[in-house]
Length: 377
Image 1 (tube, rainbow, N blue to C red):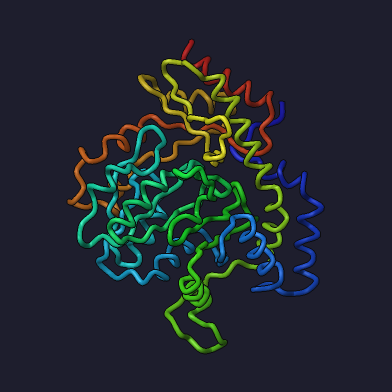
Image 2: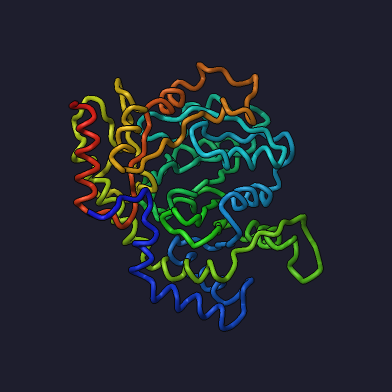
């Protein structure tokens, strides 16, 4: 059996090596390192894939989220509601812009932001909701958009972990997550489902005016060279990274399908086990693209399982071990522990197993049997 990786980027690269190398060599030959043809081609290709009017590439996923908020003109003190159980970048950019983060609990069933918690958190100062499509699973965008429309709020989708996932609305129509709210953002960090070989990100919107504003923000506020019309930042996707992404984008559906197939095999192995709650997988499974495959360990020793897997050369991780409301940087007297029962439970239960496009049946079987052996010893 080949060595198990949490993410096997080398194995993935070996299969697309010729295409990637040719794309990168084109950039090197033409010396168009910033805003070159590869960047513009990737923008258009991703717009087509997502079915969205505007894609604005940028330097990384955190910038993408920050720039999306800047483009909406949110003002210091405006309240922005987001999930307590996620990576810190989501709340980080809210704080950096001197907005007021309002952290709320998540739903135990899907680990995404709780609809009821959103409703309870709205005040006259609320201006936006940031749903995170956590671990690759689409949040309940019908309910979120209904709340936003009722209260005249912006919706900014944090789609760093779920590119390619579909949300099926109440009419039975499918939309790519990240394109449903007023604006969406994503990351192309190397381990993402669509990852480059460095940092990269993008912003999505169907709003022409917002897209125009954002295109200026990412480039020092310039639309014409040396004419600074808005306050901007320096956040551009470089051409080498765009070349890598152009090589990988045509394979994104295949990559996501490989993750979904691996998830089905994992969940089959763990079904009906009293100590394990595996991710829900629907028949077509296009609402979840499994950036992470995350179990909940109930009435069991999660940390003991973590060490057990490591002892058997199986990489694994806890995403995330500390709620955002408990982080030193984001503690606030507004937050009460009783407001976060699900998040406080999840941080004690979750464990993520290896998940990537190169997992084979031998590895999945070994990982699954090793997990089960821990509970049967």
